[in-house]
Amino acid sequence: QVQLVESGGGLVQAGGSLKLACSVSGRTFSSYAMGWFRQAPGKGREFVATIHRSNGATYYADFVEGRFAISRDNAKNTLYLQMTHLTLEDTAIYYCAAKIWDGLLTRAQNYDYWGQGTEVTVSS
Image (cartoon, rainbow, N blue to C red; front, side):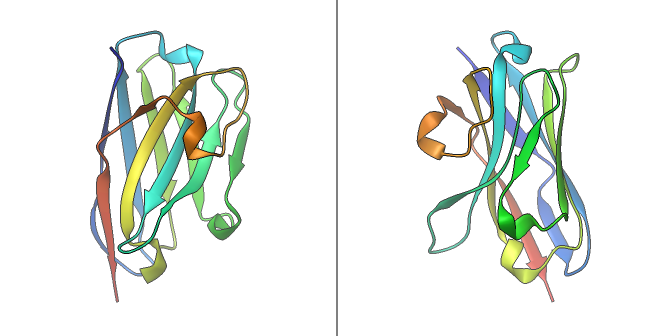
């Protein structure tokens, strides 16, 4: 059974930064394409970023605009999302997701495993 556990969320002022982490257990982390998604209050889940399981390739949603960076440490079975220049619109629950896949995945329905989410609140 694969388990994903996010951490690092919290309250931050607009313009600030946060680094989220997603710890993965259960199977070989390096087999998984990984992604970050978010869900703001009253909205659907939206794609944020994805990273290839081994070659470092990444892809971001347009709204990221260079502010976020997805990365992974396969030796530590951990996925990261460094977020900078946060705005009020970034307030959401952030989820990590995993699928055994040799590529990048941007659609939530393509992922097989999900974490429980970590809440990010950006204040003015």
